[in-house]
Image 1 (tube, rainbow, N blue to C red):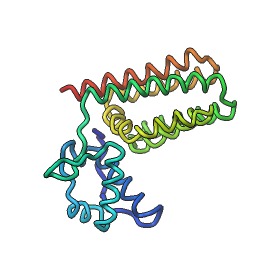
Image 2: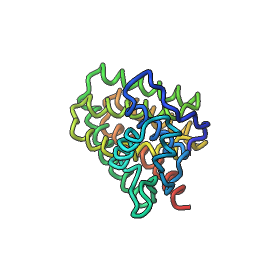
Image 3: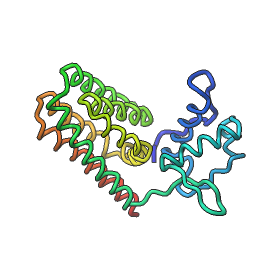
Image 4: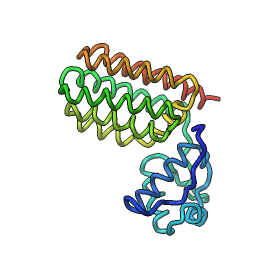
Amino acid sequence: MLDSPTPSLKVDRSAKTLRELTLEKMREAIFSGFFAPGERLVERKLCDLLDVSRSVVREVLRQLESEGLVETISHQGPVVATLDANRARQIYDLRALLEGQAARICAEKATPETLAELSMRNQSIQDAFERGEFVLVMERTTAFYELMFLGCGLEMAWEMVQSLNARINRLRAMTISSAERKKATAREMQALVEALLRRDADAAEKAAREHINRAAEIAIAKLSK
């Protein structure tokens, strides 16, 4: 769970669409543990917390269900989906496969401009880490991997990752706030970036896989308790 305090869930109506803002707030609330696994999500209560209409809440709950963050239980209605160690292992295995291959191809094919941008994006991730801004860490990490995939033409593979992104970020929220992960993540991501800049495909794939495997160890240990 995230260590930073949970902000107000009321939606700022000044930017994006109301549905998008509400969806972001709900994802953050689930990632942070504000809504616990298995907790019922009562529409009336959500309307009050988020200060939005019931129709917006229903749309958002349907989207969260499609992302695997919410599930509908008979006689209970929507609840926060429960993650278990087995599902987490499958997600990490898929990530290792897809991101390892993307790192390899990126090292071989990406333009110098793409590699330079990846380096800058990694630095922005570490800056957010230093400030303890874990939601921003997740946003910037997603942006880093998006560029790594799309920057070498792996659009279909990125679509597959996107289908898992909400669950990936939920697991990421469990690991990035761990005390031991800040320095380890910085080292692992730097190893990946340096391998990409050297165009060392073997080292890039290895670094990507090792980063995922170490995060998996922490997440699965927590879920197995």
